[in-house]
Length: 158
Image (cartoon, one colour):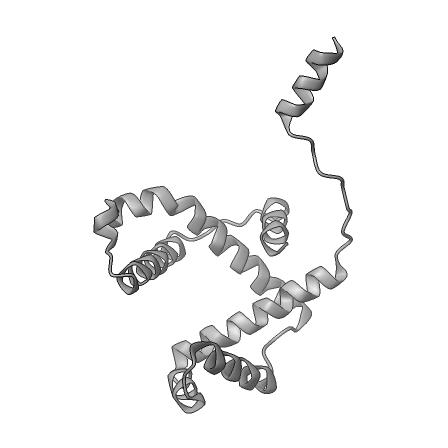
């Protein structure tokens, strides 16, 4: 639902994304996949992924992610949506529980300014998504029939 919502927002609110933001997002994405591969005892190189071909293949994804983030941030500012201290504390406890790490260790990590800003942005984004979903007019539609099944029925009836 989140992906569809953000895609609809991007479609209806085109944003010109600065090249520096795209580059930063691609760096973040590449680092993320590299870390995940390392945690599994592999490397991106083992899959033939280089920073250059990664950037080429995932550029559009990065543009969409940055566009979505910019739009959500703008809505958050417009609606006065921001992370509250109690929500930050709750998120730290949740992170501690999920990572099976001591709460003090998690708090220490998020005491760094960049990490704290990221956490606050994540919480605000979640709140904006909830706000939008709560205020959206969702129309239920029945699933589309697969094209092959529809074609067979047409052939059989002809």
